Amino acid sequence: MIKSVAIQGVKGSFHHIVSKHYFDDRITIKECLSFDKAVDSLLKKESDAVIMAIENSIAGSIIPNYALIDNHNLHIIGEYYLDIQHHLMALPNQSIEDIKEVYSHPMALLQCKEFFKNHPHIKLIEDKDTAEVAQRIQEKKAKNIAAIASKLAAEIFKLDIIAKSIQTIKHNETRFVIVKRENHEIPENEINKASLKFELSSKRGSLATILNVMSDCKLNLTKIQSLPKIDTPWFYAFFVDVTFENYDDFKKAKSIIEIMAKDFKVLGEYKNAKL
Image (cartoon, rainbow, N blue to C red):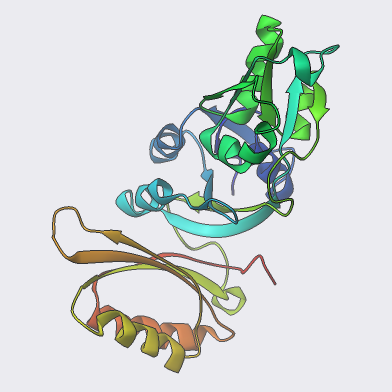
């Protein structure tokens, strides 16, 4: 049973919001200022699970997090898609003309860069976390400084929202995964999505052959991400998500791919949150 969850960031962060939706308020939140520290807390059994952002509909895959899951032999046991609304916030009684600097996570700054083209007097500065900046502004009573963070962060840290939904693309969704040390969370008949990792050489047709196996076994490819193998030139690791209606079809595909690909690994078997 999951009693504690590690998140990247502090309360009020988007990871915290996911924890509130996926679990409930009885869950203990362990705040970590990096994904590495969140994973360390899981490995040391200081938390029962970790919530990790894995990809964004605007900025794409968060590749280091794939590597963290793979390198530590962790398992994805669930996923959650969150609509990300970025708000500009600061201490009360300030307008956007008063703001000289905005601190936020690099991903948030990237997703809001068009907004700030209309406000060239504002300096954008990368920081560790969205909500942690909001917390710091409140604690230090820092005027002329703003954060980009969630509505929940503004409520928790008593900041005023100067501008709402400032992200460039209004439908901005991030996929989060729930990660544990082991992978036996739900019964087979309820599993309809899986995350896989395997390695292939750059030999012609090697990837196409694997994809044909997936198609023949009635798997639907929903995500593919390649990473070069640093220690093995011209070999690539592929991180793949597939959905399926019948778990037996997935088991058949697994048995074939395991023979054909190097270092085949199931990173997680879980329910498709998009259904």
